[in-house]
Structures are given as structure tokens and as C-alpha cells.
Length: 127
Image 1 (spheres, one colour):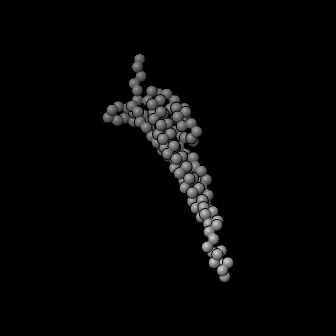
Image 2 (cartoon, rainbow, N blue to C red):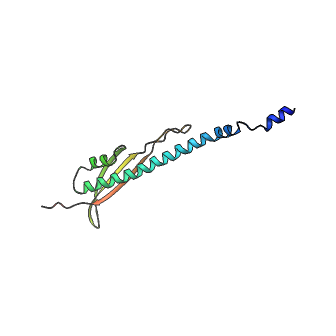
Image 3 (tube, rainbow, N blue to C red):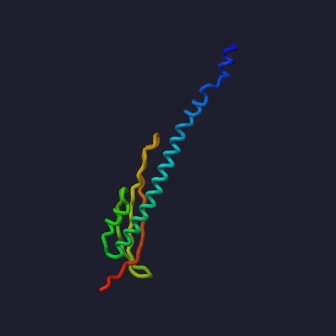
């Protein structure tokens, strides 16, 4: 009985057991933070690509290649539309970007597409 009480008071290895219990939560938190960073990166790049595409489309250039160059590394699709505003004719470029994801254990991957658009006044061609 005396040795059992001594064994119960012995705390050798308890730190390792506590660490092993908390370690999966630390890894999940790091993966979640990384995924949030990927989403933020996609938002910034998609908005920048839409602005660059709108600038090129405003002067009548190839907006698709401008969007592809600006969003290098992301899967994007773009479209352009023209319209009239109180300031005159303008072009709007819409960019749809697929968010890169990491596979989180027990959750898996999620598919999400972000949309960004930018408008610029259409430039008049000078003769």
C-alpha cells in the first residue's frame, strides 16, 4: 500500500502527457491561421488583378492577359462589361478567383470562390 501511494505522487511523465493532449489543438490552430492567410492573400490578389484588368480594358487592351499576369499563381477567370454612368462610359472587370486550400484533418478541403470587380472610366481615343 505504501508503494502505491508513492507511485501516485510520482509526476514523472505528466508534462509529456499534457503536451500530447494539447499538441493536436496547436497543429489545428496553425493550419487554421495558414488557411486564413491564404484567403486574405487571394482577396488582395483578386482585387489587384481586377484593377489592373480594368485599367487595360479602359484603353482597349487585352484585359484577360493583364488579369492573368496580376494573379499569377491563382486560378482566375475574368469578364468585362461596359456601361454608362453620370461621368461617362466606363468598363468593369470582374475577376473570380478560387481560394487555395489546405487539407485540414477531420475537416477536409473546402471549395470557395471569391469575386472582385473594378471599374474605370473608358479612355477616349485621340486622333
